[in-house]
Length: 475
Image (cartoon, rainbow, N blue to C red; front, side, top):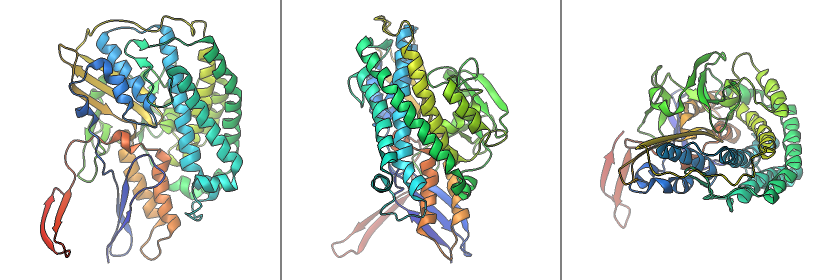
């Protein structure tokens, strides 16, 4: 008989989600869906607020990557002010954003992903967590804690605190960098470099044991999207949008990020509050694309720093054309961490990095502003409109996780079909269904802003459990 398997909740992810897997009468998987059941309507919550409050307000969207929202929001406010921020301020924003990339990728790889990678997909679930890693691989666990601490300490040194710093503001940043704090950051970079290099070494040596996962973890043709700089290199703060296909061919290049509505549209489905962005010229759902570390390494012509360029070349040699398996998101994160550390060193040696000119002042000169940057999980869009008093009247956020929603759904189906059948459903198979979601490193609490309505069933029960009334909406 037909059955349904529910995984509720999905574990070792940021936010709340469940998975439904539907089997036909023969026990063959015929559908799988990711359900995001929480709703956080940030676009509505910020209406009526002064636009200059938006960066600090939008940082509260997420406790994992608040800096990403600070950056995109401040860039949208820069556009409302119609100012070009001082170059030292742009560099300092980049340093904080790179530190955000490091700490978030370290959290994803070591805290959420490494239990599967080190202990095995079929290991005892009671041990398959960070504490199990700490017990069996204490040096790996310490490396993860230390690398994340490195990123967080940079954020704290720049912004005064590790979570929700109010340092990035419309027009730049609100305080210059001191020589003492710069030297503190630079003194810590050699250890961070050593950690990520030895992590890359052990990760690459162990890839052969994950052949089935590489084959089945959202391993299919799609588009890839992200920012690149003028030379086509990896870009995490500014630049233009590039889209490539599964062969590595450039489909669209030098797209204006602020014109995103011309090439990105958003669909909704009744089973989730997470929107489904798609590439508008192709349509929904065929316009599937992926963002984030895997996509960024696929679209870039190089990274732009010596050590990361070597790793990027090795990464791209995995496959002709684009690297398609989403299992390799783990690999791409480590390459980006290496790049971020090198780039922080480069920026902190800039002659003007200690300049006191770090903020441009102006009043609102435009009624609309769009800010785009790369968050740990992919391209992040903040779009605001204000009234004559500078109050927000409309906002739209396209969160990085949302871009990957179609791909995550298809990845679930691919993994479920590969590892699950109706005769025997192992715990390890169900863990792999969760693990394909973890590979994307979604942040569901950031990204649930959908239009439309999910199905809702309400039952009124009497004291003895008798059903007195029932109402059902949607479907």
